[in-house]
Length: 70
Length: 70
DNA sequence: GTGTGACTTGGAGTCCGTG
DNA sequence: CCACGGACTCCAAGTCACA
Image (cartoon, rainbow over all chains, first blue to last red; front, top):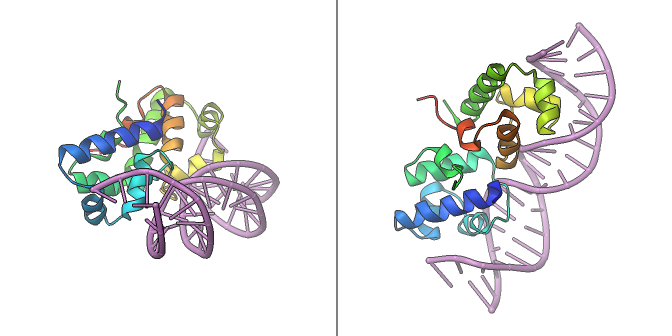
């Protein structure tokens, strides 16, 4: 499992735990909906700034989004 | 403290704990020497892939490099 | 509500050097 | 051993239309 897949998995998991759609998260994090979709499909290696914005929108620490599903 | 500063602080701390120079870490992580220098000076928002490679080279989890100095 | 292809552009990341 | 600069390449960032 590479780092993109870890981010994708964590992002999807936390997002669903919060019960928010990609669209709602996109609005909260001020990131385009299709870009979030791309990240959940491991299309890009996001920058730490994007990770940070997503983490804030989800109410968690940026580190939690990169924590390996050990 | 923004995410770049958090990464910079953690990177510098772990690197010095391991007693490795920027140059040695650059070699271990296969990242350019000047780029690591730039990251420690908060010049760029690294991608998660770079964070991952640095973490592996330091023998830690990628999440540890983004953990906020709470 | 989400996946996807196409597109542009600013910045990530490299390589050369200097003090 | 590190900060810092210029010049370069290439991908992440951001947006759109459509399925």
